[in-house]
Amino acid sequence: MTGTPEQPVESEPEVEILLPNTTIVTHCVLKNDTERLTKSFEDPEDPYKESVEELINTRGEDGKAPLDLAATLGRIDFTKELIQRGADVNATTVKGFCALHHAAAWGRIGVLKVLVEANANLQQRNIHNERPRETALRYEKIECVDYLDWAEAKVSLLDTIRTAQETITDPEKVQGRLTKEDKNIVVNTCKEKTEWIETTADATTQDFISQKQAIDEVFAPILQKLNEPPPEKLEKSYELT
Image (cartoon, rainbow, N blue to C red; front, top):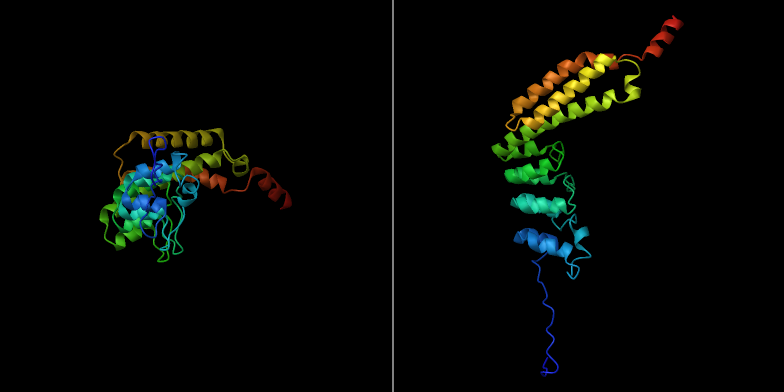
């Protein structure tokens, strides 16, 4: 196109060429270009602005979501960006593989940590009945095995604390079975262990296991009370005999 000084030439908009068989999201993952992905979300003039949110969890021909690809390649910052933008950390392929499995298989310890911090499911099993921990073991990624053991021990302790807290605040489960002292024991023990988790930065796998065992010992007699019939049912059973 030609023009005159009075009529400047209008340049054609530059066409962005994506890598073969990619969307803008997977293209950015492969290029490790977080800035380009951010632009597609935040620039109102970006050609992918309207579709990028849906593409965050769209699977390619290989069945992998962008997060799976980032995990396989060990893209730590990109993994964080995808999660922030709405990537589902627990989504699986048709064979049951989640992002944790991919990171574990390739020894991507940094990505594993990001996914665990985002509450990825450590118990997800694939078609081989493997959790991510077993996948890491099969491929001899020992650092990943050790980290996943640590993460599972920590999650187990947190789950025990949360379950105990929820139980004693549930009127249906308690139904007069526990004394005020019983409830105080649970509350104080949960508080103590929560504070221990928050203040012990160098806790080991065995530390978490030991802390859970200590909680189990304290809660054992209380749980026994909770498994007994409520007082009113006991009274009725005596009346019938």
